[in-house]
Image (cartoon, rainbow, N blue to C red; front, side):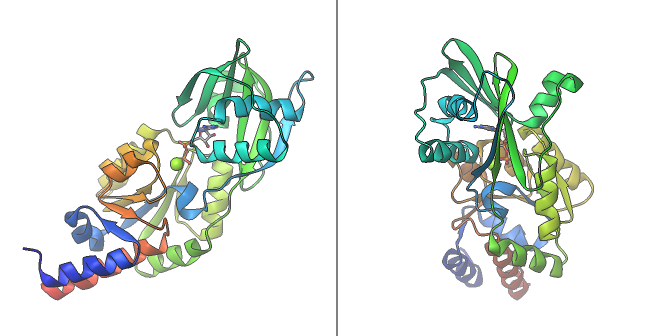
Length: 288
Ligand code: ADP
Ligand code: MG
């Protein structure tokens, strides 16, 4: 049987935007020493807006760059895709058809448009693929930047910006007051990871990580003796959520993340995690 205090706390949690799928996760919440956050959609609103577009070859205009990206992104649910499609709609650009569309998990998306190979990819992917032969666009603070490639040549770039959730400031502050360390783990570029971390006062950030590296980073923290909770919303976060001592899925995210996690943040609000820890502490203090 579930002890009454636990049942009460779980009901209280439900009222506070927490869906507890696994009671052990709730029971363990009081042991968390490090909270690892994904960025998009948890600490930030998760709505990207296009802030800058640039053509990198004479034969392309800014609108061509957007149109090519849209051809691939029109079927994608990635927040970057949503941001690009919004801009395309605003500018009345007609998306063209693409075939063989494939997600490059943690790196971008690829497909065929008018018999040309088109890719929309991260700066990290460009570095890995082209090395120093490629002169990168300077990323401005707070920007998420993707390159649009045609037959492996950069045709242009699109910069997008997301907003920090107002609730994130207090969530981080309260966690620190309770001596819980914080980290940001993101597939996005280091510049944006740095600016979000600095703004919120997060202890450390790790950027440009692929899904398996997210898992490794969680494991590393555990090997250092940390009891790790991790938030995530995407398919790419699922392995790390499973590795963490407590996996917390963000409500608006993918089903895969929600299935893997022990707890779901129904309102995607990082402040609810603070409540989770405090409820957990209060509940089990009463029992021992
Ligand atoms: P996060 O850790 O923020 O969830 P992802 O693993 O989803 O990051 O993506 C990492 C990076 O890969 C993005 O910042 C972007 O550069 C690139 N990327 C992933 N999916 C897409 C997409 N559909 N379109 C463009 N770029 C993408
Ligand atoms: Mg994500």
